[in-house]
Amino acid sequence: MTARFQRLAETDRAEVRFTVDGTPLSALAGDSLLTAMLTNGLSVRASEFGDGNRAGFCLMAACQDCWVWTEAGTRLRACSTLAEDGLAISTQQPGAAWLKNA
Amino acid sequence: MVEKRVIVVGAGPAGIRAAETLVAAGIRPVLIDEGRRDGGQIYRRQPDGFTRSYETLYGTEAARARAVHDTFEAIRDRIDYRAETLAWNVSDGRLWTARDGEAEAIPYSALIVCSGATDRLLPVPGWNRAGVFSLGGSQIALKAQACSIGSKVVFMGSGPLLYLVAAQYVKAGANVAAVLDTSPFMKRVRAAPFMAVLPDLLFAGVGLMRTLKTAGVRIATGITPVSIEGSDDTGVSGIRYTDGSGREQHMDCDAVAMGWHLRPETQLADIARCDFAFDAPTRQWLPVTDDDGRATSDGIYLAGDGARVLGARCAEVTGRLAAMAALSDMGIAGDPAARQSLLAEKARYRRFAQGLAIAFPWPHELAANVPDDTVVCRCEAVTAGTLRETVDIGGATETNRAKSFSRVGMGRCQGRYCGNASAEIVAAMRREPVEAAGRLRTQAPVKPLSIATVRNEA
Image (cartoon, rainbow over all chains, first blue to last red; front, side):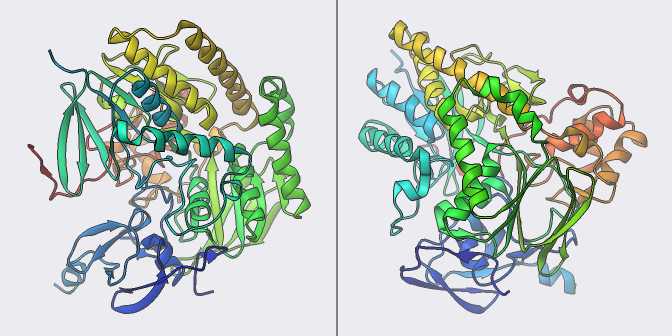
């Protein structure tokens, strides 16, 4: 299995193209960023507390488990952000890699 | 003369009926909605470009969903509707909102809070793995995105939503592996006299069971969760539970939807310093209101599941009642007969909810006995053992002290998904009733705000 979410209907929609950590991916117009990421993979980020990968939880903007970042550093909640053409997503907080190497 | 301003928070069934009632009385309310569009969670609209029918999306509630949406469209031009706006604080008679990094303080004469509910969760070993979702979240994946949360899904928890969402998944063509209910079946028999007060809802429940059984879905009642298995990397791969006769069972799956009924979003009422009281049947602290929805703080009114979980149908009733109460307190008389009829309707939903609490109880003893190495706080991966140490080593006597010591309840969800269980764990450690463990105090902002948020003085 390479995708967590399975599409059951509504597949006749325009394609949107975006990137996650530099990898080009595609999804459908009207997808949330969470749906876009989980129809392309199994998780959206790694827990900062060492207990593995996370794929969101509540989908209603309450749990804050699906935080990702734009390459410009803006924090997004994937469940309540629309996937749009040209979005460039980083699954790590900007600077996290730099901190690890410091 | 200062104009009377009424703010309604939330655009679900309660908020829309409240706004409609205000508009009919000649008021132009501000309607604050965190969502992109009206409807709330239960009558959430699918995105533009999706084509499924109301019947497909909302089943037996299709006509109600359509009526609520139609009402919103009809009053749209007569309200100040603010979508994608977070209400995050209440102080000095003003509601603080944030949208697109701009904060605003809106003064009010009356604030009607229809903030809805989230799933109530019980920590289970492995519930922090990728592929475990809240039950409500699994429903949103289907309703708003036409997706299943996995290719083989187990539904675990208790309550009407458990069977509703599982049946919706079956109807949509998803692969549902099992429905695992912690409540023993016999409890439903005891609850039937209460639930008979709303026969069509009771029959709707029976219909869901039939859908699941016809589809060959395994339904197990009286189960005890053991663990959700899988790996840190790829997430869920299976589930272990003890069945009603005490035998351990294992099942492969790649997704688990979990929830034990709902808990109200009471943060704004708490910040507005409304009194709360412990509700023994649901083991939850709820804001105190009169029958119409007046809270104990001046100018604050509460309606819908955010006040007390009574379901979407009743939210329309309590939304109207709260708006009528606000109008009456501003000197705008309403129709006493209409009020009496709404109060009678609300009483029937209260009785039905009593039945639900008996049929599908919160398994507090499971929460109290969660194994020490189980994560209680998903936000920061804090275990039950760490939480227990705050009591037996740290000397914490209630849940806020335990939070300061352990950070359980201090993470980014602000206690929404650990708070109920953490109170049970602390109370059990102290051998006290759960109400003695108190309730987590709310801090503003009620959800994380960007540090770049600036105040709009316009």
